[in-house]
Structure formats: structure tokens, C-alpha cells
Length: 488
Image (cartoon, rainbow, N blue to C red; front, top):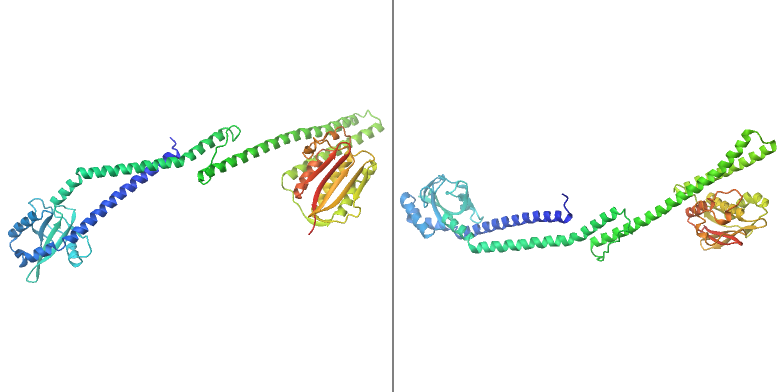
């Protein structure tokens, strides 16, 4: 059986409470007994000495033990709270006030007697009780001399057996029983109050524990299990509850994001599988025609040209897939350096000059003398601009223009790549940077492309701590703008 936190606390506090009460009762009784013994011994410490000095039988030494026994009986009748003994210098009991058979010892230890005589201030001092083989009691003692020779000790027990029996009867009287009952009731009420207090303190924890188990049963879906309300901000348990609410909201948000990402990956895999299958199927078909050898030499040349084109397209697609996977893995390193932005722009344009000339597209730079010094990763920036210009060439018809404009902005420069192509629909603009998304303006496009260039561009700019913006209208062209950090 598993005990709850409240039950464990209740059992613990019960055990601790009983232990504390037991220790307290033992300590108070012991303290009361010691205090009473000290007071009574201090009060009657001179009793034996006065008896030894005032009684003729003891003044000149003890010779008649029978007469001394009668004297002890008389004194005990007058003072029933005391017991009288005469002890020789070796500790042997010579005579006493007790009845025959009541004394259990024949001798007592003299060390406590000597200690009290020498240091009467250090109280209480306990001596042997002749009526008990192992008991001890407080006492008064006086040495008895005969002609300067120690004859023995007058040993007076304070608190006789009669006194002890009367005290025991009083302790068992109705008044003491009532007081003990009231004390027990008070302790019981205190105990119940502590249990209620612990229950009040552990109730929010029990509620929180039950809620966590419920949420776990529903696989942490807070849509099925509403969040608990915690209002007392100064209460640590309520603060813990609010923290768990925040944690569950974060978990749900991350799970939703992971689900969306997983769905995107599945869609991307499906699209990429289609893109890989298309050039592979075409390549396989033309290679089969070549293998049969039924075509003429001119047809063979054309078949090989088409097969090579499909191989190039397949290679470009696989390269972009690996590049995108590498960027998403988070292991890409960025190497910032200072370089001339104008030189990089003209180098990139030179790479596409022949293709633009063949497509009858004009490449332009604004301003013409683009002498700007920037601080960035030159290799990744070159890849970004190449992707954007290649995308612009693919969607710009013959006679169109592609321009790169650089404008100064606080902290750096804005790089804008503009084209006079077909443009992008406003409904599709939010999705063009998703992996493997192709806008409707690319459908039916016969130019070789893989559809991952813009997704790679967006991730590269994210590594450079920059963002890309798009302005486009159907039939008028598109503009891609991103910022590059300048030097201070």
C-alpha cells in the first residue's frame, strides 16, 4: 500500500510528537524530583547535627543501642517523614528506627555521607536506602565522636517509606487524575491541530500531483485537460503550479511545432522522391534506347545529351538536399571577415553573364561604382546572391532586367535583387522559403531547378543574423531584400 504525502507526514509528526511528549514528561518529572530533593535536603541538612548535639545519648558517644533504638522510634513518631539510622565508621548499620525485617541492607556506602559533610553546598546528594538493595535517597548526616574518636554517623533518611506511600496516594488522587486528563486533552487537541495544518498545507500538493497524473494519462495534451488556476503568488506551492502550467504550455507548443515540422519533412520527402524519380526515369528510358542500338547516330547524340542533362539535374538536386540537411543540422560554421561588397557583386554577376546573355536578360548594378566595405561571411553571401539571381533568371522572360541595388542603412547596407519577371501571387509569398515549395509561376517551367534554392537562402541569412523580405506583384516582377552588416 502506497501512502500519500499527507499520511507520511501525519505518521511522522505523530511519532515525533509522541517522542517529544515522552521526553518532556520524563524531563519535567526528573527536574521536579531533583528540585524537590534539593529543596528538602537543603531544608533538613542540619537535622542530624542538631540531634547529635542535643541528645545525651549521642553527645558522649553511643553505648546503649537499645535506648538509642527507642529514641529513634520516638523521633520517627514525631517526624514520620524521616528514618533514623546509626552507622559505625565502616558503614555497618548498628541500630535504626525501622521495624525488624524492613531493613534490607546490613551496611551502606559511606562515600556520600563524607561528601555531604565536606561539601554541604553541592546538593542534592543521594545515599543508600537501607530499605532497598539498590535504591537511594536524600539524607542528613552528622558524625558522632567519643573523646575525639569517631564512633559512627547519625544517618537520617529524608522521605521515609511512610512519606513515599502518602505521596504515591496523593499522586493517584482524583485531582491529579483530572489534571492529567486535561493535559492529555490539550495535547490531543494540539496534535489534531497539527494534523489539520499539515492537511491544509499538503492539499495543493495532492491536487497538483493528481493533475500531473491526469495530464500524463492524456499524453500532456492540455486541450483535453484544462490548466489549473493558482492565485496565491506568495505561496511556493502555487508558484510551483504556475511553473508547471508554463512548462506544459511550452511542451504543447514544442510538440505542435515538432508535429508541424514532421509533417513538413514528410511532404518534403514525398516531393523530393518525385523530383528524384522524374530525372531518373527519364535517364533510364534514354539509356535503354541507347542500349538497344536501334537509333541513328544523330538520335544517339540527342539521347545522350538529354541523359546528361537529367544527370546534371539529379546531381544539382542531391547537392541541394545535402546542403539543406547540413544547414538544418546546426553544424555549419560562420567565418566573418571584412571585404568589398562591390567586388563580390560583380564576381557573382560575371558567373551568370553568359546565361543572362543567352536568355536575352540584362544584368545591372546600382550604383555602378559599388565600393562598400562589409563584415560578413563571403562564401555564404556569394551563395545567397547566386541563389537569388538564379531564381530571378528562371522567372524573367527574354528582354527583361535583373538588377542589384545597394543602399546605405544604419548599421550596414540593404542588398536588393530585383527582376522584371512574372512575379509571385500574394497568397503564396508566406510559403516561398519553405523547403521544396514551388509557386504557381514555376509550374511548367522547362528550365532546370530543384526548388530548394530559396529555402537554403533563408537559412544562410539566418546564420548571418539577417532576414530576407520579398516584394512582388504578378506580371511586374519581384524584389528580394536583405541586410549586410557594415564595419564600424
